Length: 164
Image 1 (cartoon, rainbow, N blue to C red):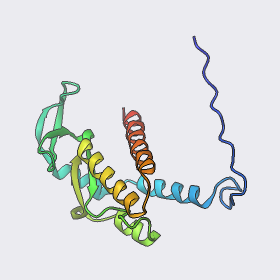
Image 2: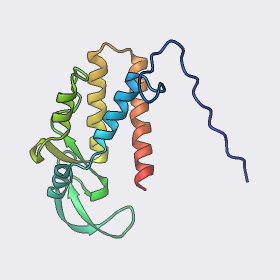
Image 3: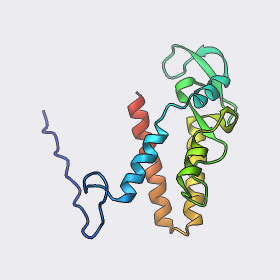
Image 4: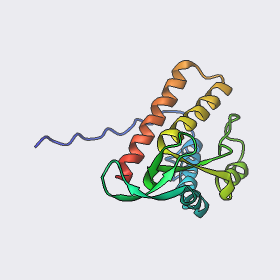
């Protein structure tokens, strides 16, 4: 059996102020943590949106088992419930970037009509377009846009592995 590789700890950059988490986190890391925690909250309206996209029982093409099928309004194909996402009609973080916690929270926790149930492939395209619009608005270079694409692909892969 191969030995498990030991994960290297990142070397902290000198000169960065770390006022959060006992001197371990920068403000950016703390903000990222809070955003992630808020996004992970189970907002019932998201799930109601996906339930409304239900069109009938069918067979899951991936497993061959019975499942509830949902219609994606973007590509007009049917998908099992676990392949659907609730997309915000108004992006949580718009092209102007993060503005304030009040805006972030009010856009994140919208009522049912503020969501559209889309399949994961369509949601990925919409999310990438929004991310690229933010990068373009900030005047980012092509390399930064490539990093944004790489990050998005990595996040989707990690979340799919977590769900499996």
